[in-house]
Amino acid sequence: MEDSPVAIGEALKPVSDPAPTTPSRVPEDHLHTMAKAFAWSGTGMWSTQLFTWLATFTVARLLAPSDYGLIGIAQIFVGLVMEVNDHGLGLTVVNLQDLTERQIGQLNTLSVLFGATAFCLSCLVARPLGVFFRMPHLPLLIIALSVTFLIRAMKTIPAALLQRNIQFRALAGIEAASYFTYAASTLLTAFLGFGYWSLVTGLVALSLCSATMTLRQRRHCFAWPDMRSLRYPLKFTGHMLVSGLSWYVYANSDLLVAGRVLGQSAVGTYTFAVTLASAPADKITGLIQRVVPSFFAAAHEEKPILRSYLLTLSEIVFVFLLPATLGLAIVADQFITVALGPKWLPAVTPLRILLMYATAKALTNTLSPMLNAKRQSHYTMWTNVAAAVYFPIGFFIGARWGTAGIAATWVALYPFLAVPLFWRTFREIELHWTEYARALWPAFSCCILMALAVILLGMSLPAAWPQPARLVLEIAVGAATYSSCMLVLHRRELRRLYRIIRPGEPVCA
Image 1 (cartoon, rainbow, N blue to C red):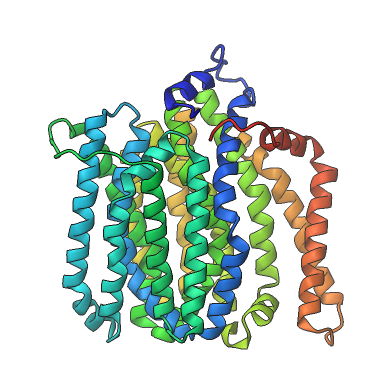
Image 2 (cartoon, one colour; image 1 turned 180 degrees about the horizontal axis):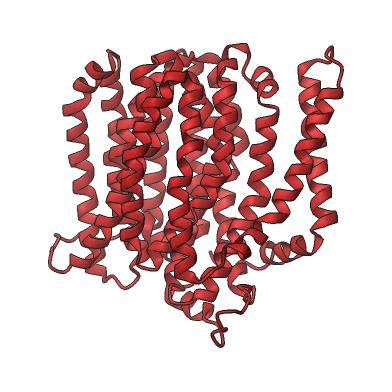
């Protein structure tokens, strides 16, 4: 039986509110409940990860960087419109848990109308975009990818209802099947010689599989929109929509600038560097964005619980993500050579730079959902609007130094986005920055020792050693050093985290 959001909210309430000076560690039952939700979502997301990555590297060997560049440019526009379709309405249903069935039906109708409008808009602008980027194959590519707007529009509200009702087991199955379909269809069509069309085929197949399985699990009726009854939901949706669009503008303006200034081959190299650098963080971010809004919304008046959520989530993200990104940055040149071949070596420098901010990006992505739950969606909106102004300007300046300059812009400007979000979140939940820093210290201290061990090992190995052997040994030594340091220096904290994420009886289906 599914736990309702109301029931979860009641279960999360503490017996009594602690004084403001009480440490932000509350009983772990509610954290264990969230951990189970993460476990189901992670199962769906990572169960096909090995197959997906093998398919990605295989397809990369079959295709040219220019193919990825063309797809990367097409996805700038397609992803922007997809953000309009998915971001606002779905998050509104998840966050506003007092919506009536009729209001949800009205939002369902709006979702389908938005999807149809988006497809028509894509058909109109596809040719001008091809002229703008000087890519004659781009228009047909955009139209083909825009078919996903119609498909995804049908599942936006049903998927949000599954998320809101804590049905993460169902979502996990949908996730696994969809990405397996994506990887298999992309790999098959690439072997058949379809070139960049193999990537399009995979994306369309993913959307079709996801929508079909979602509608089998959860459907909802349609109702004609009544703007009077939707006044507040649409206001909240507006904040989410503007915030999401602004995020999409600044998050993809690097590819826009690279495609316009550096050319198709360079943007292909940069696109693949972005893909590698963001892959681990994106998986964690995807889990966070799927799971936490329901829990944050249920506990939005309970500051001790919200503090505990933020500290624990940030600590777990840091423990797993920081060693992965730092380790990949250290061995990036060997990894690229062994896994992808010498033709991708130009991606090493932007990859290393992008990995410098990947973990900070993942930590920051826990803040907006919490601010939205605290009804501070207008603050996140204006923060993202500002970022949509200064990031594109920075990328145009950084493009003078090629792909490395564009990557360095992320490192230089991201603090201007992250610091205001941290400040407002800490103020809203009454969290001091020193307590947050203490939560991050175990992983940070052990990663310093890990980096020293790997660097010293690399300097001591004979130059005649084959690259694959060096890579495997350095990864093994890095993993062993990090694990040993965590076990020896921070055993108590590891035990606490294990109690939270330990296996047990499922609490959410």
